[in-house]
Image (cartoon, rainbow, N blue to C red):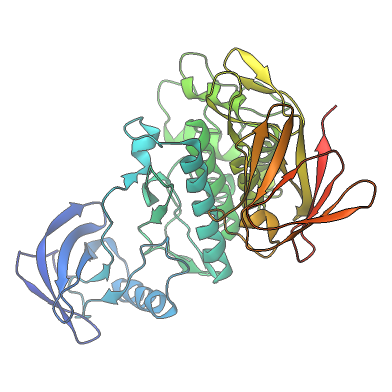
Length: 438
């Protein structure tokens, strides 16, 4: 097998589709190869070229054909920085693939974990989670599984929460295996134990780890038990494979966060009960030891949509908080509770609620059961002394039914004064009931 040959500036590379690309400069280097900035000679577009260390492959032609297949099938969603073109195959010579260049303004996920980058709002942070979940729902729906999901795969716009997912060359069709098990601390316990190869079920474990780290800033299995001098291979297999235990396990507190060491774990108390329950289910002993009980992408999406609409400003101090719908919420040194909540029809047997508090927002997702649009605003809860209203920001009329049975309509721009047990029909059978807390 030939040695790796680095590319030089202005060097022209032949592409498998008959075109050529010219090297502009180097973008970066990793364990698999070098990434170059190139220009497509037929269009003038600038792209990135991942140029492989061929010596890393036992069967480089098989991997090349795998990349060609993924290019032909196409990207599952715009969130994936997907391979677009291959270089020409030449026996055992180096090869690579062309992909989009990362746009400016995005930060690596690791920078958020290391406090070198920050979201500009809670809304942007939750959007990042929603974008991750949506991307992997699309990936699995298209018949792929990722197999090597970890913190290094994501770059995020801190202002919007838009996510780009890179290093997609190990993505495989269901039932296929790339030969890559994954990255330590992100692999599902059954993969660590050697019980099975990566698939979409193990992807869902890794996704839950990423979401937990996104929101809490700690690893879900690293607590008191993992506080050892060094995480050797022996300890890795024990803590992340044979004896995994969630740091907030509802029944077993023996792996709880260590005060002063796991400082970010204090964020846990600021999240609503339904988010905590979702993580406790995802990292239950049943999930960790058998793989059962892990949330599907659709279930995570519903949880995160509920979280997104719980973002309000505390009426006492003005800080952004996640407001519980039916109970008190901790905010700094005091507790707050909404007067009630809007109760929607369940999705995937999961509750969908929005607290009635000034500034809470409904999205197209709430008023259209066929929609997963979490950016288009459908309504806003407004507050005046002694009462709350819901402003219609859709282009449809709402049908309002009072407890007495009397009906009225609210058009675009009009505001409905919210009263106990009123029902709001947004159209298409999408109905919410006004519930007043006791």
